[in-house]
Length: 191
Image (tube, rainbow, N blue to C red; front, side, top):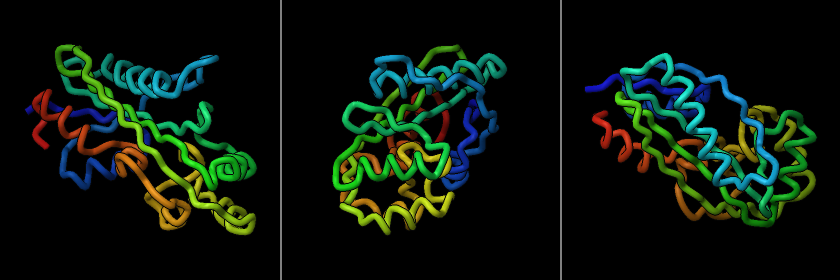
């Protein structure tokens, strides 16, 4: 069995692998996640996942390295991780009552240096929210901090914003597990 290196600083992704019982080394990558001018969300999220995997693979050339990235796209605009309460509130205000896409890309660099990748696109419909609900939501930093689009499905507060989901539930959390398991098995990691 190959050794697996998880190129992430995301506590949610780390917890998913722990829950799966897959032993791995954690190595947070340092890559520039700036969106290029005019870049589409699907190209952006794949580029960042690939950059993370390749960066960490430089130090773990004989092992399997997995990286992922998740972003939110609403009306063609990429919504990354808000840095302030005001930014989180603006994102929620724009998306409430509408449907946005959550894109999650996974990239693996195998022990020979070959790339393996996949991406999921999930449609998420946020219910219409009152101003008070939105204010209450963003008042708790854990609800939005470090989460693309300013919310997380894995928290009760974030899940309460959602009217419906079409696609990968775990992709919205940050790692499409079904697709990731298939990729890992294709490179010899027993999951």
